[in-house]
Length: 47
Image 1 (cartoon, one colour):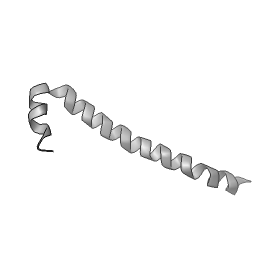
Image 2 (cartoon, rainbow, N blue to C red):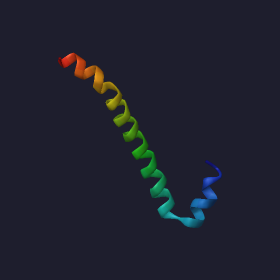
Image 3 (cartoon, rainbow, N blue to C red):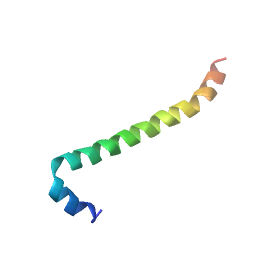
């Protein structure tokens, strides 16, 4: 993380926003992947 501080100070706000959004998207994508992996089991329970 210490390596990012000089880069952020040079480039500024867009880098911070991009990193934050990438982190948020990653957590949501993990939830989507988990839901897709659980889908066959849920389908079997319904039938």
